[in-house]
Amino acid sequence: MHSIWEQRSFLARPDLAVVGAGLVGLFAALHAKRLHPGWKVVVLERGPHPSGASVRNAGFACFGSPSELLADIADEGEAAALHRVEERWKGLLELRAELGDAAIGFEPSGGHEIYGVNDPLYNQVAEGFDRLNVLLADITGPGTYRWLPGGPARFGLARTAHLVRTDLEGPVDTGRLMRSLLAKVSEAGVDVHFGQDVQRMENAAEGVDLVLADGTALRTRQVLVATNGYVRQLLPDLDIEPARGQVLLTEPVPGLKLKGTFHAHEGYFYFRDYEGRVLLGGGRHLDRAVERTWKDGNTPLIMEALENLLRATILPDQNVAIAHHWSGVMGFRTQGKEPLVARVAPNVVVAAGLSGMGVAIGVRVARRAVRLIRE
Ligand SMILES: Cc1cc2nc3c(=O)[nH]c(=O)nc-3n(C[C@H](O)[C@H](O)[C@H](O)COP(=O)(O)OP(=O)(O)OC[C@H]3O[C@@H](n4cnc5c(N)ncnc54)[C@H](O)[C@@H]3O)c2cc1C
Image (cartoon, rainbow, N blue to C red; front, side, top):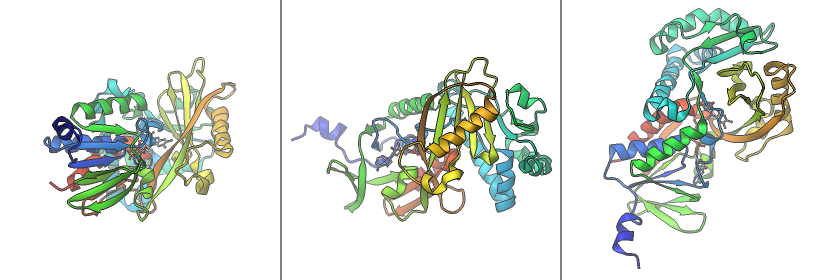
């Protein structure tokens, strides 16, 4: 026998239930509440706090590296590749405007791509470099990328012959970003419930029943599934695969020269400074089948590859210990690089498959998904 207060304030059927409290789920809840202030919007998250890639990533606020963008242009043509860059760039500006640079710990210390000695990638990038800057001028402004001849020495990098820089990128503090987003979402009147593991969705009269791991069910008018790399656990037919990313963090490095975000080996490795330490991740391409998983964990093969890069290139001749390591799960489309934003059932919309770019595109992917929700 619930009171009228319980019924009205806590137990009323939501107009929209968002599954997953990552960047996409939280921004979607925020957009939905702004668009429909009278709606009851809830977020259901199975972890004790946001627990997916949005709290496990490397915190690069980036829109791509020259080698990636040139490869995309070659594969897909200028229009499609540049549209994606534009989405990333606008997304980063929106994210920063929405939450504020101080709150998300954004540092405008630059984004970089490095090339080794006799690196064929360097020749490809050098060849397309001027054209790429011309193409990007309408999106990010003139001179987006520039060569930094003394760059490798300036950042203390060994085995690095060339380095490209853009001033427009930089690292964020992922934890602070997510905390400030969560605060904003709660302030907007969205209820975020943790420890709610949605096991399945069932069609119900005028809505959907979300069946939870404890056997209870929540009836909601509409659902937005924002579970990214885990999305097949609820919707097994979707063309989105999990992809684990492994990360390590060193102990503080005396006199660390590294500053900003860095891509290496076609973006398969990435590293940055964080509070005087090196944060380094990637290497998934070395063991694709094993890394196609939604299990957390670090493997010797990839940890060794990360450590080799650390000791040979990033911190040569410095015997700094590894302080910490972790992993996170991304979602990749099996075809192409665009996230999936679609209605998959009368009352169910999905926004998932953000690959390694969710910091940049999360806010706009969420908005697109909310536009698909029925009035
Ligand atoms: C190691 C690593 C490094 C990365 N580095 C960068 C970077 O530098 N820059 C960048 O832009 N992007 C990066 N990314 C990618 C970026 O983090 C993701 O694209 C983004 O966080 C995806 O956000 P999301 O909200 O879609 O998913 P997630 O953050 O994964 O959120 C999904 C949420 O759903 C919850 N959930 C799942 N299933 C259920 C269920 N059944 N019931 C209830 N809740 C459920 C999960 O617990 C999780 O909290 C990186 C990712 C990883 C793993």
